[in-house]
Image 1 (tube, rainbow, N blue to C red):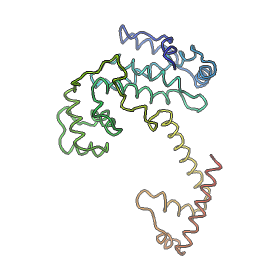
Image 2: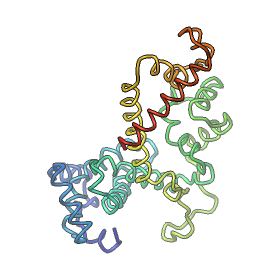
Image 3: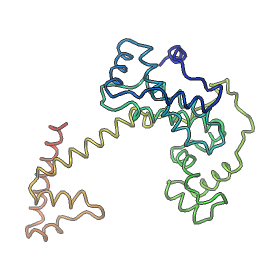
Image 4: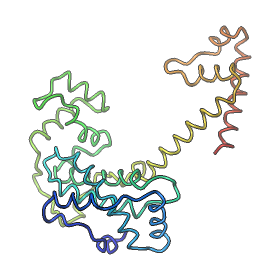
Amino acid sequence: MTNALALSIPFPSLAGSLDTYIQSVNRFPLLTQEEETALARRLRDDDDVDAARQLVVSHLRVVVSIARGYLGYGLSHGDLIQEGNIGLMKAVKRFDPERGVRLVSFAVHWIRAEIHEFILKNWRMVKVATTKAQRKLFFNLRSLKRSHSAMTPDEVEAVAKKLNVKAADVVEMETRMGGHDLALEPLSDDDEDNFSPIAYLTNAEDEPGLVLEHEQTERARSKGLESALTALDPRSRRIIEARWLGEQDNATLHDLAGEFGVSAERIRQIESQAMKKIRGLMVSAG
């Protein structure tokens, strides 16, 4: 959505009472999937500003709810909502009505991304939260802590293992969050060139549209594999599941040869034929 288009969409004002704003956004009617699709097509095909406005205002309550989950970082609910609204407008611009998913499922990634960027900018955490793992640590440490007191060494190790970061990173992040770290050279809020948004949306792998597409693809593959497995005879299915889908160590050819009373080479042949059939079924289903 261009800046001009974003500015032309009227919102309930956040300048006054926050309670009044929340009551206002909750009065906007929810859209059915058919209404949402029709509006999204009008925006895409005709650049219809009114369609964009309706899509945005019908989802403002979602932003309020998501922003409420970030109140523990010392920033006002109103500021968090404002940033989330920017993410919502970006989502509306990029929403594809032909994907068959609801706007809210797509928009939540953009809303959270803008809120994350805003929090990190205001906490001056950019230097620390530069990697994906460190950003995950920053936004999960508060909920993983068992108390408001300093973490014990065992708790530090448990958090580090859970989030796949170094124990030293957990200790440093806890210290910074507890002290509300300030930058030695504060950045100007008016100079966007001085602030790098931690590559939160610049990394192609983190782009919300691609994330959603990847999730849909994985679900489709999982469903296709399950369907293909049901088409196999019991012995072939048992061999594939034991060889490739075991929760722990996969079975060897010799293990299965003993189970079925045939040679390991025969098991390999059955496995090869079954895999070929599975690939064919999944390709035709796709």
